[in-house]
Image (cartoon, rainbow, N blue to C red; front, side):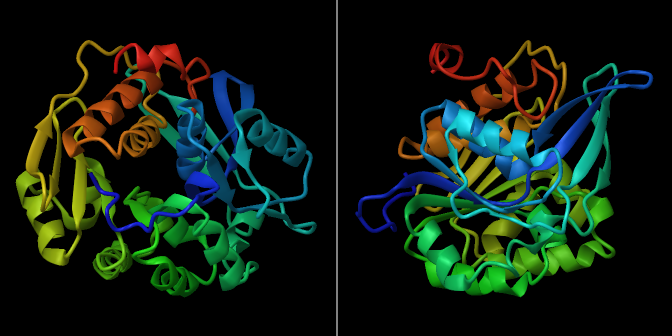
Length: 314
């Protein structure tokens, strides 16, 4: 479907992601919190690994009493962290989450000055590019654009890997991370020449461009130069476009009980990438299934996800 541009070589990984993994503190009751780990592209690696893909993580870990558990989680899930440094003077980022009765999350973050924000500045371009080029696909998100130091280095990196690996960008908008959302719009415009597949939700698009229809949004991304667009719209059909497939519309999974919507888009991304060698519409369908399965449990990573639970619905 979208693999014809990638050179036929032996790859160490199927998916490598650049981002952060934060310490998650989830409110279970007044004054009571459970602790785990999560982050948008990290969640995608988690789901992709559970689907059988070989995954690698580009980030930096802090030095605090959470680090051991984070590294152990990566080992358990088969997520390679060989490129990840541990910064001995900076902490891991932390966020707190609570969900309402409809399963919609709200967040509070303490990530400024965390080790992960130094990932680009503390890793050489050569090391980063070599690691990514050992993979079939590369994923990053707008959260990284917002929190990383030395963001311009990312564009140097994209220029190095362009045409050699499939590049996916998730326009995961967190308005509180941007002093001026117009800065993100400029990034979105610049990224069009590098990105092979854009993931965007209706909410993401609204935050950056205001109210407009799915057709208007997809038309804008096409005119900006994106090669493929996947537009998620909650319980409404998922729409997409490529020059080869044209416009497609895939129904959302129905009768889904939403316990926690956190990470639904991350699971979708994993499912889409997992099925990316199939047709464009089929990759979206598998993404929809994975997203629907993810919302049935609390947290950014559904613990029962993977194996037969997904495959039975393929």
